[in-house]
Length: 181
Ligand code: PRP
Ligand code: MN
Ligand code: MG
Image (cartoon, rainbow, N blue to C red; front, side):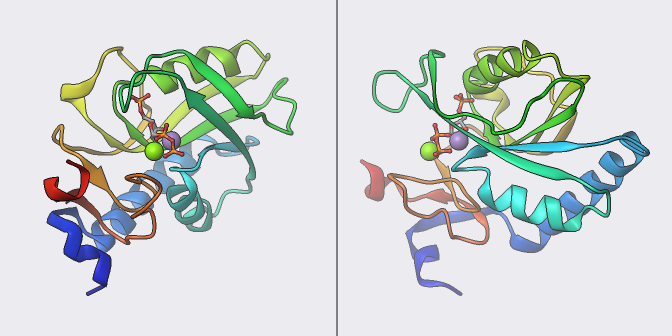
């Protein structure tokens, strides 16, 4: 057990469950992109862990690139207005793009990103997300590769932060309310 786990009330998804599910998703991805190029686009910073593990589990040849975006808004609520902090280095023309995300919360970040990347002339754009909160959705997102649906709780770990902390937790858990309130 690691010390930062002490700030959780509950572990929602254990490290080995994540590994098993990512491996299943990788087999689907390999089948779908057989014979095709594949560019993984990770969304900084939350997607770092899922990108690292997904990419290493894939036997398919891939390239990786990263975007950093920031959504303006009041407090922790995403407004859907997104600003690019770091753009891709890669030209998307004719590429098969798979966006890699840690979580779909309201869906506003991915909704914006999806239309932004689609406007750059790629062959295809799909989404792989480890987590989704169906009860928090404000916009419908078509996720081709989804790890887990989770309840609408404050979760951290495996890339997900509270105030930039807890990203290095190996599991995904519910943060104790006394930490953030
Ligand atoms: C989080 C998370 C997703 C996004 C999901 O990122 O990593 O990218 O919010 O929220 P949404 O579906 O409501 O748009 P955040 O903006 O906290 O940045 P981070 O990845 O650097 O933590
Ligand atoms: Mn993020
Ligand atoms: Mg965050």
